Image (cartoon, rainbow, N blue to C red; front, side):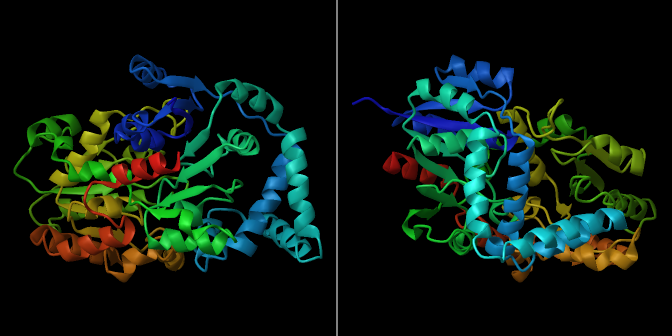
Length: 463
């Protein structure tokens, strides 16, 4: 029997890690014919996949007119106010407003309130979605994408980023053509932090029970029987010892020369969210210089994939205590680059060989918990102390609350507390193992390294 043709979208570096590096693509090949569509020209990856016999295409650039962008902006307002209804959505909005001018905030808030108020009028919401459908056809290159995708003879579609504008029109076209639509939500924060998912998928896969309930709450009428809790395939690497480098090879890779010292991993956040964050790296560096952190540990700073390493170097300056390390980052577009198997081995080894992890309400809290490492989060702001409560609110976002409820990360409410928590963790690096296990259970559900197989089994059954 001829295999069904499954279109698989890749519009983000992390999609490569999930779809290709976990081995999911090889598993899919056993029961379907993968047709891979990238939204950018990643030459090394394309060559690698074609050499293995996969069909690979680059999606034509998606074009949206002004009118279509405007209607989608209105739908974003509708989504947050009428459907998302997350009690913590305002936390990030309030936090980020401090970096805008009064005029910017006033204009944005006025526009938002005006559009929401209109939506309470009879028939406005219905007309808005009718207009969106018409503009999708008339004010984008919908017909070009339709003409492009038809000859591929696709039976079903699989995406891990159903909210991405880079593939939005393609997914709408495929849905309109009657293809079976399947999604596995890439991360545990995507449902509440990303925007409206315009396609009603036949199948959804998520990390945990919270994601399950979010989908049911937000997308009315969704079939609960077609939402599957699979865990997180990208965490399978952490339970596979083959993805650990030797300590010597890892140290050489990241540039650490002293094997006798303990290592603090500081996983930085992006400037777009945390422009003042380098202060915490500076505080740790100063504390080591002043012998306030015992044992003169090394700080391994890992730059966020969508951040620029140089901003941290410029802020903190050179230091014998800090080793600066970059993660996978695209040259032209920070989120568009190949993630190799070695990149993943380097990350796994970094999490494994470091002793204490510090980050600002990041998914890295969960990554580090998979390795039973103490997790510390700065929750103060010496640059803008009057706004420190807004920073702390960033931890109390819907997706992250389960971590806080099991005390999975120790929040430092001052520079002195950050130093004290770091010292305590360095002395007793195994003290939080039970909390780490609880974090993993709450967020990725399964800690057995079999999430990729679960996703593959659901895909096979559905296709």
